[in-house]
Length: 135
Image (cartoon, rainbow, N blue to C red; front, side, top):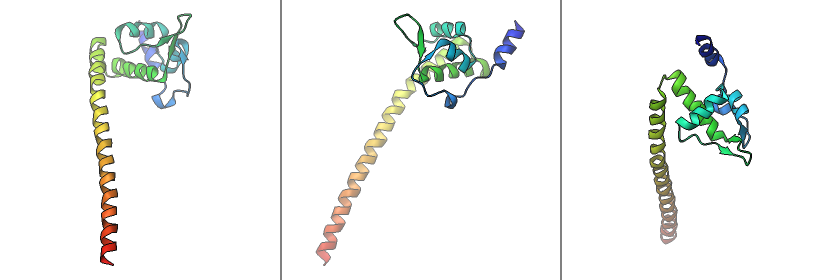
């Protein structure tokens, strides 16, 4: 058993930036890319509700880039950070709750920038009018 753990940890996996530019990946490709066995990926699907690869008509799993990035994050939490499955699930669920808030902050920032640009444009028009009045 200890040999299997060492072997599993010794398998090289890609960083998120090194994932090939493809739309979909089969479970075998994902297993090779991430260094996580296919049976473990299937187990993680049951344990982590946010990991939901699509399935083809023939019921084969097809993963997107986002799924692979999530798998790499789960792997990091479990194997490097030593989270329990329950702890990793809670951590990812909490992180998922923060994303909508971050999105709304980004939208607010965009609205503020748009308003600032509008004010700058109007200020430019006022300056031009004042310059014409001074002549």
